[in-house]
Length: 67
Image (cartoon, rainbow, N blue to C red; front, side, top):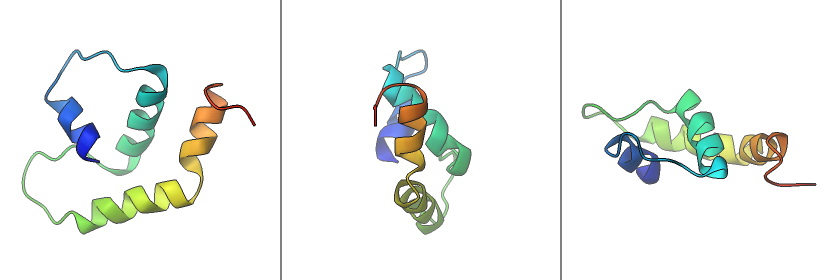
C-alpha cells in the first residue's frame, strides 16, 4: 500500500510488468490517498486481496508466475 502511494508521486514512472499488474489489482480496491482517512479499511482490503489469491491469479494470468 505504501509503495503504491509512493508511485502516485512519481507520475510517468515506468513500472515493471509484475508491478503494474499488482498496482492495477490493488487500485481496484484501494484508491490513492488524497486526504486523511482511516486506513484500516484499506489495510483490510489489501489483506483480503492477498488472502484470496487474487494477486497470484493476476500474475499467473499475465504469464509472470507459472503454475
